[in-house]
Length: 206
Image (cartoon, rainbow, N blue to C red; front, side, top):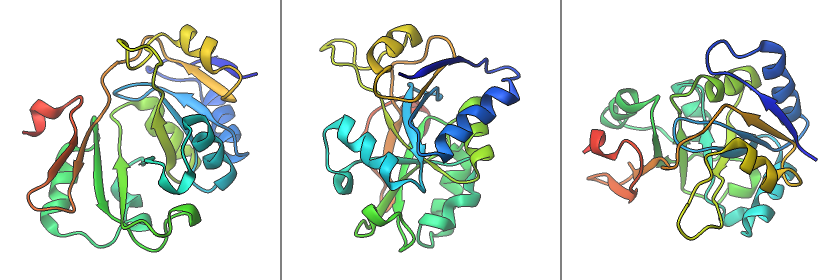
């Protein structure tokens, strides 16, 4: 059963952050807040953890549309091919923020994604998400936690999230009510960039 941990955006408790990071490094699944919606994530180095998320989402891991959550752009070269200056300027302008940018990948992607030619990169503008990645030392593989309700696509209440996910995740972070609009997804491998999903921040990008 998942542990529910309270973390405040303002001055989050270091020991609690370390506990979450320890869980991630051990192959655990964590539900955490972002600048858009609550997300389910794991350590990019744990294939077993990624397989768990894929099973929960009901997809094959090789086909799963996961995002790589980064602390800043310093991890870009770890998983992306060389990008031009225009693309880099776009990333610098809109990161951190509510965007997922699809970029050309390199051969260093985790084994299940070796055949992928692209990778989705996120640098969320949220102190807890960024601090978790910073302390972990590498990206978190992540996906939004959708609601099964036909009207409400994303659950915003941590208590309701806990009720649904307590037997699926290992730690659920309570950061108060979250958002209900996912990130805007834009493919930067095409010219001009292609809008894949309308979401938060779209008006600021156009």
